[in-house]
Image (cartoon, rainbow, N blue to C red; front, top):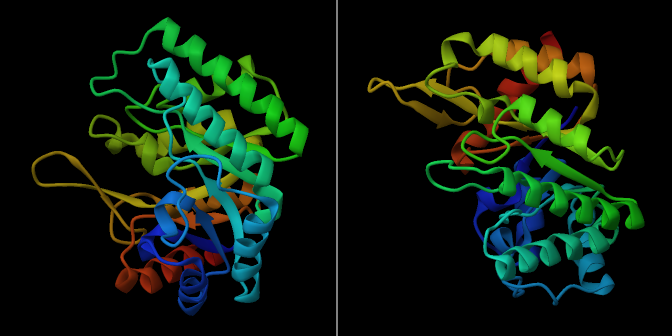
Length: 274
């Protein structure tokens, strides 16, 4: 259960500079979102990837002792604008096709959101159709689709993600677990219950894990912090992660460079204890 990091927490850099910088901080793997983390190649739209380019990036990380555990795809998967949705689906499918050249076993995303969360049955049906299409591509290339529930998104809670997995029953669709995404102002006081429910519903489908922290602020809102700087029950999180998915890759979020060492040590210390 090694602790990695979001590559774009180091900013957007040429990939030959990014890989050694990640290694210098002691991380053995990253979640790589190409258009967020790499500055010297235009990934603003699909089409620039090739087996050679994907291999070159993957090999650069590998030479520095860093693997790419997750390819991140930050797109809206049920966008009501069909032209935009098609572009997003094509971008995700391109990453699935080249994931193995990067050395990545999965491409992962949240579903997408609208302010106000006024979701309809049609939104759900479109998301299901999108996932079915992505699953067909994933099965063709032997790469996982990682889905992450996040508050405010169409799939915002563990029961909703469990429902989608039941409706699209492919073994190539897995869960990126992140309890921090499931907590809000109204349920933070019973966070243990929320975390336990997530593992009960999704534990056997987990293929990666995210690590950030949450803290109740003086104004009553829930803030987001790097791991070890908040009030989330990491003992419970790591205990359940060890039980359900020992050695699953953990990807650290939120931390600034000067906070990374503390957060990494915090997670690893709890992991060893529980």
